[in-house]
Image (tube, rainbow, N blue to C red):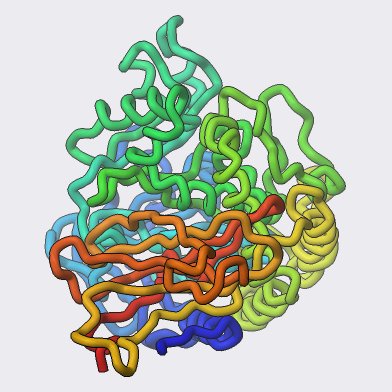
Length: 544
């Protein structure tokens, strides 16, 4: 009998994720615990003025030589990035480095582009790295760490080094890069001014359906060769048929994104007044998957959640409604999806998981302090930084800035976690899956097993137990209900053990699966990180 025990799996998953985050290949360009050195050499001494001009009046790049660690790259393209963070004449504008600007095959460890964020409105300097680190536990999100930037020999400061979401990223996460691919962002004031009168205004990347195809052009940036028809079909279906939407959209990953943004008060996202800062990629299963971006304003640094509303004060950020926008027709990823009772429970389950694994145990604070210790000396000697050294030191526990009022991360999250934990839709006791097993061939059973017999022990009044399974990782998971009737390899009827027999469709020998239990209060998964580490077995093992 092949058994998977909750404690072992929980410890193993926690170990895998925390250890992998901090001690994966030390030489990897995005190792979180290693600060990279990037040296940029321009021929021109007036490089700042040239980069300003290129940013304001074109999309070209300035040629430079770049050294990353001990590696030298010639004819590299450099440009300023960002819109809100860009300041003409500024000493700390964010950079985009295109290693293959001229030399098309030039790359560093397979990465062809580098983007360096200036950490605007983040006196702690950890929001982006910590935010992406938490996001990667649950979603396909970019890697991020730190880099010391030198230009023509001068130290320009410590920047956040964020993995660029391009074909390389898509291939590594999804196994393909030829799907429809969009960047969801807010139109510029000029673009919005010139929008057709028939277009809906102030919706950005909400996925609200538009009758006119041209209305999509200013709210979404097409990053693939084609895909507008796919996006329009998604918006039309999302706003009319939630069942069919599941065929076009990875709703589970959307709910992870929404839960993450809400718990971390990341309002510079789909949840904010501008629904922006995420990508949509159509994967090999034909479903759009969200990919988060830009985390420097998470943990309450950005405070606007709807147009013409005052910025939230600290208490409003701490007590942000976990069901924010549930009744807002202009936010259909929330309002349409959460109408479904199962998806609503799935959403609150994700909130609980994020809370339990990162905040209730204090891990976020410990990790943030470790990151600050790592970068402290580089921040202190940064002459162009936005905040004073004492503000960097105080930013974990106190609000910084009289006008911007950027909350301390712990100051925000201690009361936020307490508020969410007590919320009536979150505090309920979901089912507890204590054991999952796959039955081996019985001792005196004739012949070999040709099917998979799975059962799960579930406490706390489960009403429904589902198993999601597939016979190959290239397939999408299928769902089947498990039974507690004494006839489904589940021991005795009504004993809290649910079972099912899954027959391979074409003689498959292997299976990947996970279990979801639901009751009136919520639902739970086994294993917790089912999206990246489902359970698995094979008939050869079971027939021994």
